[in-house]
View 1 (cartoon, helix red, strand yellow):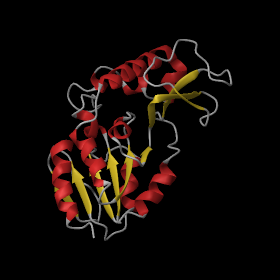
View 2 (cartoon, rainbow, N blue to C red; view 1 turned 120 degrees about the horizontal axis):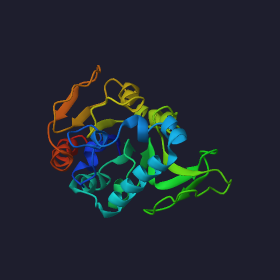
View 3 (cartoon, rainbow, N blue to C red; view 1 turned 135 degrees about the vertical axis):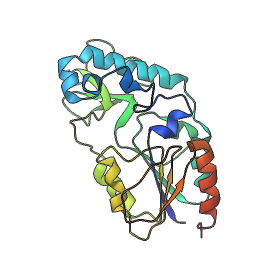
View 4 (spheres, rainbow, N blue to C red; view 1 turned 90 degrees about the vertical axis):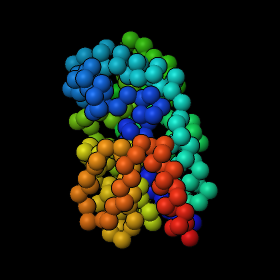
Length: 230
């Protein structure tokens, strides 16, 4: 069974009603990134940061996986599917995908402010003001913020390097280091990119562009991949 590696971004969850950060009406128009998504923001105003992620968690609880998420689950019947996601929602898992690696953390988890390995599943509840981890440090969202290292990057690069097929869904490949994963993909590996807006990937790979949203785009991708299942 061929290994199909899929990198997903905010566009993957847009059809589930999860607001993207960079589109018109997105989250960055309501909040400055430096105020809610940086390690400096956490030290400067932890109450604001907690409020922002509590809101995101409440929104996520009401969201449901879309047709695109379901389509990726179906692909597991044909391929050894590995999803690497920049998203912090749990919609891939709720849809039924079995191998998901979160590069930027997970909204339904919290962690110690001192020990990044001390992770607690909190589901969709708020992190309360003054709440602490077992080591008595402030409990924070298990999110990788700007200014922090991406712990899962090495594992993601290894997965990408072993791909027989590689697909990018719902991300413009502007956020590093995640955007650099394509450079770990073998030069002759077929690459597909699904995004409703024109996106140019700067790579030596031959890229098959599918200019659709996640749901319709993955249906098209599935038909193309069936000829390569082998």
